[in-house]
Length: 413
Image (cartoon, rainbow, N blue to C red; front, top):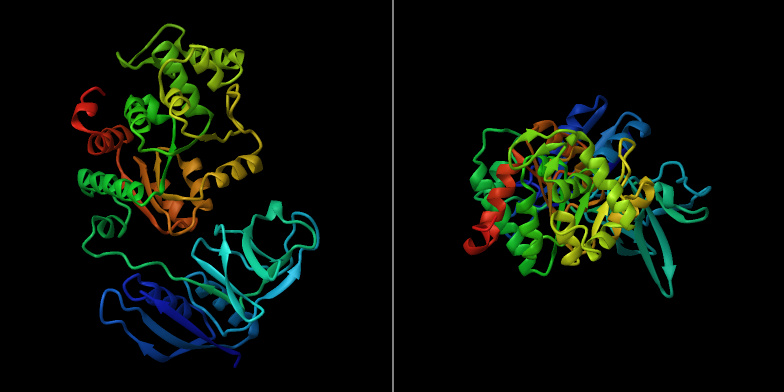
């Protein structure tokens, strides 16, 4: 029978990686396995190592099961990676290796080299720079004819996920998606992770949807930006448009935020707000000209917080800064990801999933939505490091601001 020795090394018991791999092996007909060697770590710092013989009735079945367990950190024999040139622009070779968001290495000329800019659902491009070889992920749309691309699964090493501290609130949060978990404790944990990230010199990324403005939570996000807790903002046309509508007209979707009631002809306010910004030339120009005097986008401009507004087919206007080409929007988002240690995603399914697809597993991700389906979609797409918080975005933003901003500052909100 065709066979292969696979290796699992790391905190594979605590992270449930071992059980996931064995479940996969057991689920295939015509596949059998035998644990040949097991070394179990006896302290929190000590790692475990397992050597497993996998046999299958056909080569095709073996390749299929190896490809699946490899996504969970299973590594194979130490052979060099196979490289093939891309046949044309925007096309990978057949059998190209499709990346995960886990830390990855490739073996080239008998040396392991790290894969840079790790991102899921990409290929791995390898090139020589001077006397050294380098490797990096490359999206399908950006590959060029002749680029050397890794194919197959030999010569690739993936680091399994880190163990989760069982005493942490996030171990409980990450167990399953549920609305019946302690919200205040969870938000305190998010605030603490933000503090730790800033102390390490890492950036905090905020991904937001328009419900933040509709629910009246915009001032809390403004305070977080003003006090230096947010380093990058990802959103769509809607959050920016309704934030500017609120700043200019006091409404969001035509509803007066102070009264919670619709105003006459208020449904026109968002498009009038967009038109006013387009007349000024840009959001930044509107701030500089004194047209825009408050709001989330105002705080981003005043405090030099970069933002990426990625457009969609349903956008009104859109605002001048909105990137309507999806590939350009992805590249703009990628440019701001180096150095990000924490990502907070609030009330936006599409932008949360899009950002999650770009993030390496080393980034701690918090996804907040009142609909559990948003978090489920994010984890199903492969962003397994996501910690879900199923709650109203106004409650989350208010609590996060209270835990991060000094009492004297939060009292002004």
